[in-house]
Amino acid sequence: MEEFKKILILENEIEARLLDSVLNERNIPHRIRSYYDSAYDGIFQTQKGWGVVLAPPQYQEEIESIYQDLPLEEEVGEERKKDEG
Image (cartoon, rainbow, N blue to C red; front, side, top):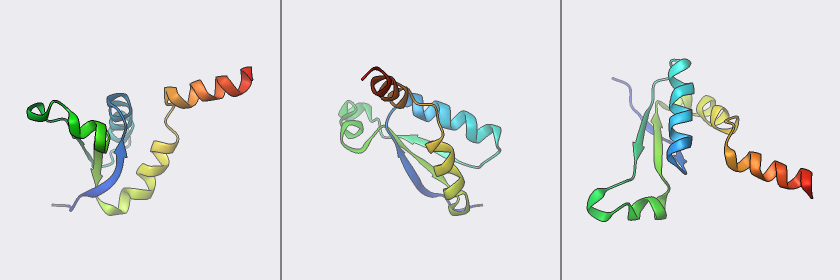
């Protein structure tokens, strides 16, 4: 069984689902774990981020590269602001 380590922190569920989809397509072993805890009503998500991506260390660079290339809405919004300004 492979050892998994924390690769990166996700900011929201949309990032998590999108990254999970791409990693599954590429057959990259990973786990995505949310920091949500109903007992604390999600307080850890506001402090630590939405969740974390865990994977074998040899996939870290590839996963980080994929994450950087994700078409996230925040980046699109900021690019529009630059174009309008």
